[in-house]
Image (cartoon, rainbow, N blue to C red; front, side, top):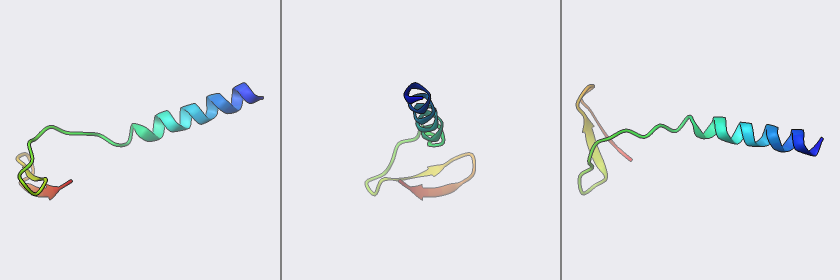
Length: 44
């Protein structure tokens, strides 16, 4: 039972961390940049 719980917790953590996706692109002095494909200017 402990092995099953550990496996389930590990799977949930692994899948939830996959949601955060990084993208390339340098940032300016404010930590912001323009997404050239959409024209959107945003900060991180």
